[in-house]
Structure formats: C-alpha cells, structure tokens
Image (cartoon, rainbow, N blue to C red; front, side):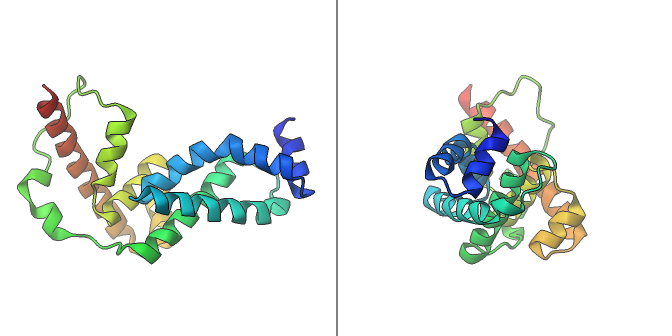
Length: 180
C-alpha cells in the first residue's frame, strides 16, 4: 500500500492501516519526542497523544508537502505541550555561568560522536536551551516561529540557541578528552 492509499484507509477507520501507519512512523516520531522530553515515559506519552491527534486530524491532511513533516509538526507540538506541563522552560543563568559550561575553543573536525552520545548530551541541556536548540537546529524553525511557539521573545530564542551551542560545544570537547 502506498502512502496515499494508507492514509485513505486510515481515514476510513481501518485498524490494520492505522497500525501499519503507526508502525512506519512510531520509531522516528519517538526520537523526535525524546529530543524535547528527558524521560522516556514522557516522550512515549507525547507520542501516543500525538498519534491520537494525528489520526483525528488525518481527514484534514491536504497532501501538500511531506506527510512525515506534517506528522512531525504534530509530534513537536505535543512534546512542547508535555514540556510546558512537566518542566519549567526558563533560562538557568547559574548553569550557563559555570566555567565548565562555557565553550573555550572551537570543536575540531576529528571530534566524533555517535548519535546516542549526542542525544545524551542534548538531554543534559537546561530545558529552555534544549527546546530552542531542537526547534532551530533539528526541526528547522526560525527564531520568530520559535518565539511564537514558546511564548518568548525572538531575542530570547537567539540567546538560548547561542548558549545551548556553547554548552554543547564544551561538553562535546570534554567528552572527546574523556574518551582519550
């Protein structure tokens, strides 16, 4: 079954098609949710709620752009809703002020991290930094969109992205040193 046929079958309420669509997208969408939510259980809850919303909204899908992108947007929005309910999305100046969190030198090309290691490093960022970094660097949102989604100013979005990058850069460098 191609994507359009699968979507049509889901809209008709065919449970096999719904299961097939879920199986196709669940792993990728769980990864998306995990980028925003530290605890796996919270990410799984966002995934389930996101799929419920996706199935309810499926009749409104217009086949414009990528279906995966459409579902991803639903998952990001659900993860952000979960994040608002569970965690404070504030900038922790204390975290940033610590010398070990400041980038002192540029990362080198020979620094190699596995995807799991990078994911782990992302989860160590303060919530606000992690959220803005994910939205900007991984999801491709602009600062104006991020500001609207999170209810912050564009300047705050830019600042948190900059601080997240500096913190990640420092932690990547530290990880590379520690592994040698």
